[in-house]
Image 1 (cartoon, helix red, strand yellow):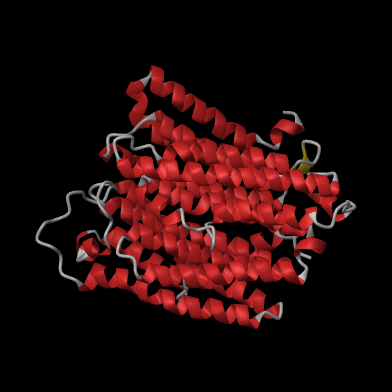
Image 2 (spheres, rainbow, N blue to C red; image 1 turned 90 degrees about the vertical axis):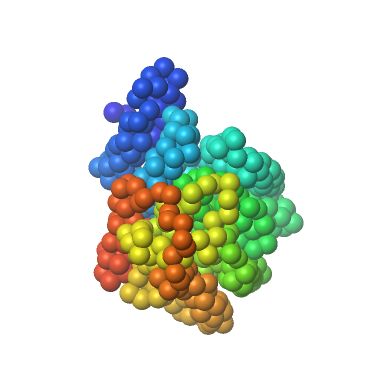
Length: 475
């Protein structure tokens, strides 16, 4: 196979399987029960091909970087897609929404995120961003009879369109200032206008901040999280954020003389502090579990930004480890939400978890462990992720930023432990749960539990892979 095709085999697999599923839903509906397993096989084949095919480096005239960083991020995205698929089938069967379009759109969204994270050219970043976003617009509104799902899709469409406009405007200004959209060329490109460059970087960072849902670009997240189908919310909570963080890291590495100046470091630090403080304080007041996890996600992206503020090989390594940790923690939490909720049209109240720890032990234990991991309690992978980003801040002489992060984490312990309290310390309501634990949810929960504990106790392999991935970015 030609080198230019070998480099994108995983994306080709995802797009091809997605198209096959959409056509199968139209012409072979009797195969619908097999759709999730065909999709999962496609995801695993894409993951295997990414590790079997050598990382070639720069391909397609240098606009794609199929390197160790790209392989790490692809693995993270495909793992999140596989976990979302395990969560999706029981949910779709229960809501009578098991259509091939769902699985096809999920695969195309993953392909867009993968292209976005490996892009070395801003136009390729935009193509990946749009493929990811357009698929998510439809997935968020997939429950067509549910007004909350339609509202979530509409809100994400408006925010996504606005952020895409900001990204294009920023790219246009960057081209006007430097004459190139190729990221590695920014290091040596002469800046023709001292005003356009900061404006361009500000617009590009703002567009990515919308995808990250960091303060003050966060307002859409609670409503979209609450209204979207729960498996889509789980995918949305990790995949676009990971891709956006990697793009932001590549942008910082390419434009380091401009971005890493004190004023830009202060801006990123302000976003991190605002996200950590607002996310955790707002989560304290939430009674809906999905909204609580939305504000929790805002806070966690603030923690991840600490690593980018510190930057360097150590900071970016911490960010990548944090992304891997956040995937397993969040997927376990949303799997429990999908298993416990009886109707997507009703709130997912924390109070409804009362006594569920004894009725649904596997999923409840995974939810409890994910809460401890999100709080950063050892020996979970959540503790390792926070330790690495905070240590990077300390070593970069930003002790105050690490202190703010630690204090914000202490605040978060209250609302995370509250979930565990309701699971095991509150009596079960008279009405028993309407749905049992589906075995795919149990499998997902068990996989996340193993990952959270094993990677927390033995993080060396994950940290080593992250260090190899950041070799081209760390300064």
